[in-house]
Image (cartoon, rainbow, N blue to C red):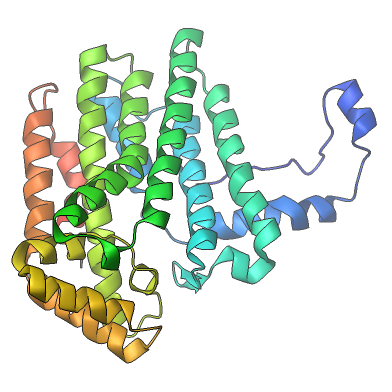
Length: 327
């Protein structure tokens, strides 16, 4: 995705703004915003959300792809959230590269992440859509971003080693629905809205997107543990005692005593890499194939339910095929 940030011939259009912001060297704009944002966006990502926008647009009756600005808006919003998440988690790596705040410092990285939120809204506002639909979309984006922050607050404050076994799954589900599920639901909802779909179809695609997002979070949680055991250095979920799906599945299979022992081991690891790897291995051993089966089952169920509202889900199934078997 090519995203133009501040034009090379940046000139504020309003005369009052022009007086307030004198012409400055382009190099300063590049160092302040263009380079950090373009650098982060250029890193390889799955672009699943942009694909869902276009698939939902077609499923809802649209021809071809949705307006490009909508898919770009979703990717910019997602990118901004990743930058902020990495700061809040004090992550060292993202997509095989050092996190942005480790490269350029927290102040500039935080500003870039927040700026991408607003750039996303501008992209959406610039889409060639009728004013009524445009207003509806902007309201939906603001509501979704607010819920994502609520989910992030829960994610940051809840510690898996301090929860009762019965509390872990509901907490993991709430976080997943509000954060990853919320943004993915927004992707499918916007695609449907851009195609002029009725309220029932928009709602059906929004529900579908929520559950796809939950599956994305399940897959990410599993993959982080698996990659950590295979030598990757990103283990933020364990280090920060996050409430993740492997813990939720383990809580369903272990006795309360066994669960307390595992939680105690995590609490006392104190950054000990070998102990954290041992906890990760124990989690994966207990979970077995439960996680992968949960993802497949949830996706199949949601594709079936979506089929009651659209003619065919085959194209959406193809777009999500990698998610079901990805390890």
